[in-house]
Amino acid sequence: AFTGICLTIFGTAQLVPNCNLWTYTAFVVMLTNVTFMNHSEYEWPWDCLFRMVGVVTPADHHIHHKYVRFNFANAVVWWDQLGGTYRHPDMFPGCGKNVRSDPSGRQF
Image (cartoon, helix red, strand yellow):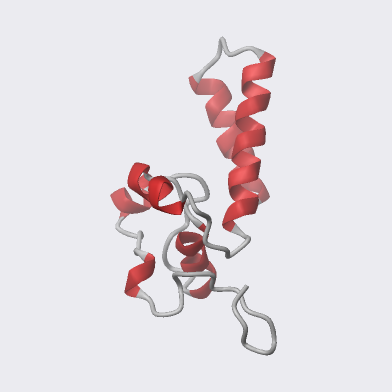
């Protein structure tokens, strides 16, 4: 994971070499927040919009943790779609709405 994040940040710096420090910092902060939200395993109100434009949602990323052969992306699903490794959450029961639960079985 650390290597993937570093490669993403380094790759972005190479693609946008004249980017100022504040814009670059804002990008890194935004990417970090998306990564944290993806690991929350909570359905956010904006997930439908994110999925329409190709941004990874917690349900998309949950599939990666449950079935490690799919949904490797951390920010956008385009690479998974190009590589044939993207799977929509609707294909897997229990990977959609608020997949995280406490020991009593209640959904968060």
